Length: 158
Image (cartoon, rainbow, N blue to C red; front, side, top):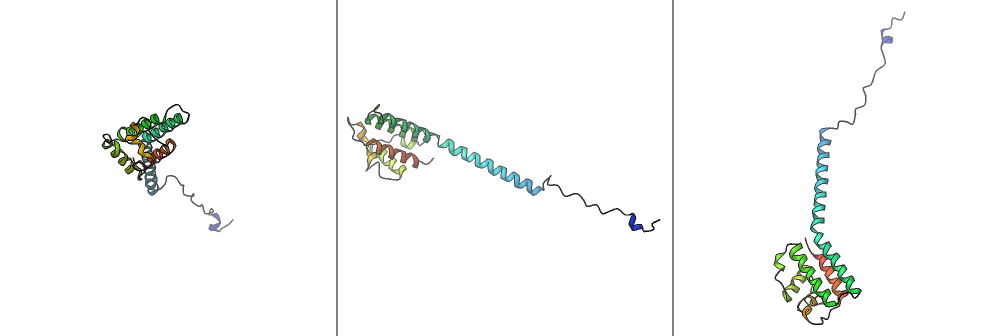
């Protein structure tokens, strides 16, 4: 008979490893903060996308109009008047900038210069969007004007 009491003891049992679930309170707060941040960023991106929708639509219509001009479906005077109408409609109706509604002639050209940050409308190819467009045969370089209007649309702040 074995009189050694230590021999009767069982081996040491280690406790189970701690589980990763449920996480500590700090992880819950961090996760919630990250989720709120992601949702806010998505909302901001959607709002910017919606605000720029009138500009995208104007660019699409302007490109379509230019394509019609290139294929000789419309004349330069039709392009000139239609592109001016598109710009005015974008600024007044699409972007709710009602101060641009009554502008015409030199004031309109100065307003376009202010938006584009250049002098191309009062002194350059964009001058055709002023009173020149009402002449019988307006002299306009439509490809240059088209590029200028696209540059203006890119400069519009929403």
